[in-house]
Image (cartoon, rainbow, N blue to C red; front, side, top):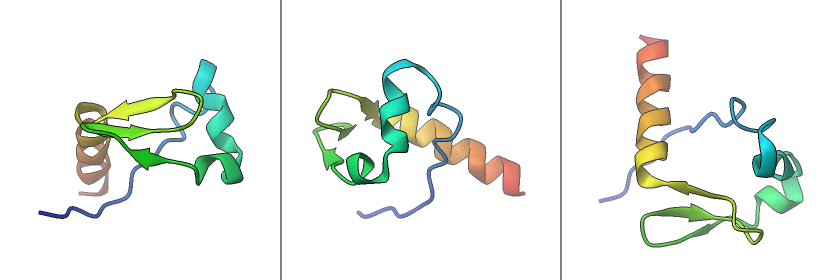
Length: 62
């Protein structure tokens, strides 16, 4: 099954290690990893975090 949705990350981009994700060239280095996504400097988002953020977007737009 493939799910496509928008994930709003602006809430975390000013927090610690995630600030590096503001660089679009670095952001594009994202890779899938088992149960989530990861960037080269070990920033990662688990499937739980992704699902939670997608749910919040859905609730916000209703």
